[in-house]
Length: 128
Image (cartoon, rainbow, N blue to C red; front, side):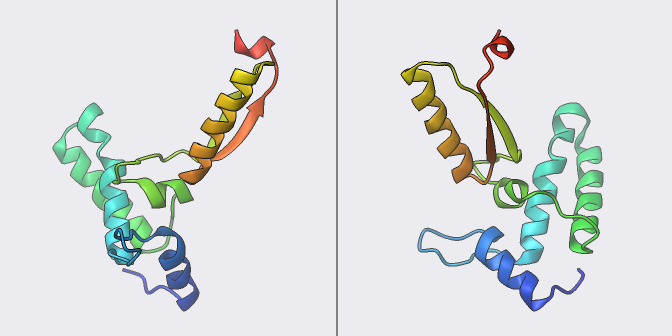
């Protein structure tokens, strides 16, 4: 694994490493890379096979641990966890009524809580 700078370690500790219920860090940077690589490669179990999954897990781990590539924040925070939200951007429809407005507000808050960003579509023509 490529050594991480002091600043990189601080950012990982503040934002990305998993914590227990008391807020104590329970994961190392290497474990984070392995967790994310395993979760992302698990798609191969649906569309490929176990051998392909292990191959891509190793490939993804290598590029992350050597700091060649790091995925977006939601992937680093959520891959391999019960939340498992890997997307960073969501566009939510908003109809011109109170129920829709407050439902969209609730959904936006939940998305942002898990590290995603939100945009809003106020166009009635795109909502079918």
